[in-house]
Length: 314
Image (cartoon, rainbow, N blue to C red; front, side, top):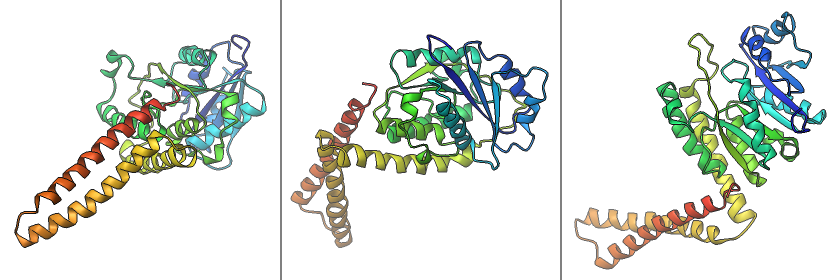
């Protein structure tokens, strides 16, 4: 307990092994409960911890009958935390890359009024030097997609699994709507946006071990992340600017769509016609197409600015 708040930690484990023993040994005293969620782990990580000589009485191991995926395992821990009235719920991975000493940094924003805090490995430039380049470039693209899908334009490092959330914010979410796989963290932000929650990035350090089993391939998951982010983006825009409210953003998005369609069909069809005829298009047609194209880009720019202003963190 810290500042009178009951705190639990949810740790999904799959192919973690003995690393979980070292991790739990470093959990701060102010943590009231630790839920290890063994997601049908083939190397029996949960049993390895229960049979260790460093067993912590704050720990409860939950065993999934089937492999639900990392997001599904986290949701199991979330529901257990909600049921037992823990006010702040921290989520961290079981691979010992995250330092439990940094948990308090994630708790502080919740005490300040934020609904959700998440780790960011890139807030300090010197930390980027030790980060594997393929993952760095992958994270840049994933962050861009996540900004579009979630609406949190000031948040970076979307797949960072070191997070904390208030119980009162978590119970408002429909966990069944949130992804069960590696898209879980990005999907959490999308769903938090729809409920107008404030999120804060917190600078954290992550350790990388060469001999660790990597359960996620960025290359394999890239297309999966892209299409899911694209789907959430269209759903968010529809909900925010058309279903839920009509605003200046609705106007500029509508102008962007209409001018885009007009430019594509009017400008495109005339271009193909006059090119096939091998003659210059009339000045009027060129002017109309140019104005439409300019209008398209201006409305896009204004739409992005307005969407940034509508960020719940503003």
